[in-house]
Image (cartoon, rainbow, N blue to C red; front, side, top):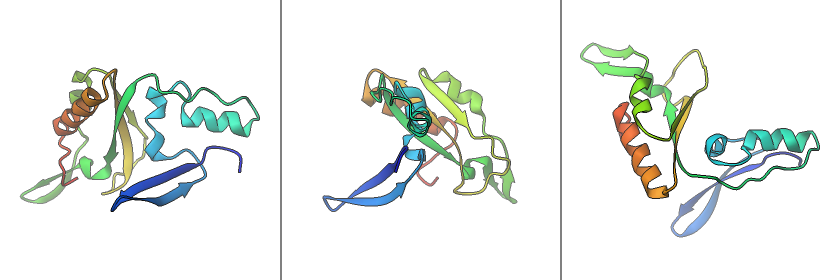
Amino acid sequence: YIGTLAVEFFVVDDALVINEMAPRPHNSGHYTLDACITSQFEQQVRALCGLPLGETRAHSAAAMVNLLGDLWYEVGPTGHRHREPDWSKLYAFPGLKLHLYGKHHARPGRKMGHFTVLDADPERAHALAVAARAAIGITDAH
């Protein structure tokens, strides 16, 4: 195989379990767009074109949050109502980079975008990402 190969792992009862192998750039590595010298997308192009591979080192700590289609719906007394999330709330967070994928229809569970929070300190990046999630209405129920 030539190209980017993503391997998604989980830790279950102190054992490492492979969940998925994807022969392509993968959502779990989208943070590389903002946090690494060479993103997984650029690395894929380099590999397929026979170019030298790029430096993969992270230049910042990062925390990434997936934006699922559920976020585009508000539950009210008359049921679910479609609404665009208020993205302006995210821009109050330093180091936050928003990526919307331009999909036309939001559905529950569909990946519609993500944001990445960059910071020199990994714990601060995580704390800012958690606060940004809350600011746009992402709860543990999402």
